[in-house]
Length: 496
Image (cartoon, rainbow, N blue to C red; front, side, top):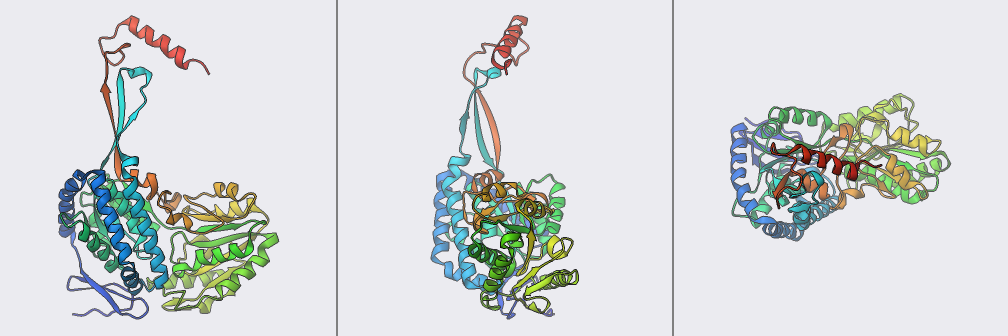
């Protein structure tokens, strides 16, 4: 029996997941759906592959990962076209996304040994006769659940970190973008044909739940806060640790000495790229009163030049359109004004750029993640008020500040995991910077040194070098030796 197909909505027929373009309905591809038994078997194979992969050492893994990086570069147009077909995003956006993914593979491969390799620690008083060492050991198998909005760079971040650290990976792509996910797995197999070090399992939400319960050593999840809580609940059943990158409601603060034209251009990019379907997208702007009017005019001018269906692609997940419509309607009903777009901007599967002002703080357009090409601009008295309102959210993923004299100080006060100063979204493209949020935006980090360490356990080792001068950790210590320890303790640590 053939299910009714709606463009962009994944359909399962006869055990096969069918992916389609959200605008045209054109089929992007088909993949087999995994049940719980298949997920468990995939993880079992991954555990065997992990032992082989770990045995390659840092140099061996580095060489294979750099070959994968180069393969992606050679075939980047192919990957971009597939991503455009499956998500609807413009080809240029897909190219930029793939470029960031290449950066993360390259950085993880080149830096894993330096960050995770064994290192000696300084000797301390109590055990002066011992040397200390720290090394990082992989978990074995890491499960990665990826999102649909950035199906290349977002999963490649934890995948590259986990692989560089010596783990095998089982990857569950979003059911909205399984074909891009399978492309990543298949191309990796071209450079690592010996063992199934990177595998994919496909399906709907129950497949992700099965992966959490499959015996993986750690999970990495990117998606909504609601789903993140379900992932954590499933992981908690077996105390499986997890890295969570969830929703966001990121804010941009524009100070009085900001370059208004540059700030407006960055605000439009940060809010409208990928049709606003960006976890670190700018959804709120707080502009100080002296430059507010000029900034709003500049944003409206720049956003008004974007062409829906070209620079602004379709909304990839059809049910998100209802959320975007509800947020716009709520903002207008509560007294907000649309200076660009508005209620009529929602024309499925597209939403035209919409800029809203005078939106009250209790509106869903201010409080909740919209995930569409909308932007609210709020006038504030000064930077202090801007910081207070920007931080008035349960989320805390990214953010941005435009200004000169005080921009960095303002950035440090934002409650978020990342901030861009005089730009937007740029921190995602730097492989050496940790990426992650606070509050309902999640915890843990991918990318950079912190990201590598997320996918390996720290292991401490002490080695006796000589007989104990001051025996402490033994029943054979004498009262005189204990007294000597007390004297040494007071000499070394008794003063302020």
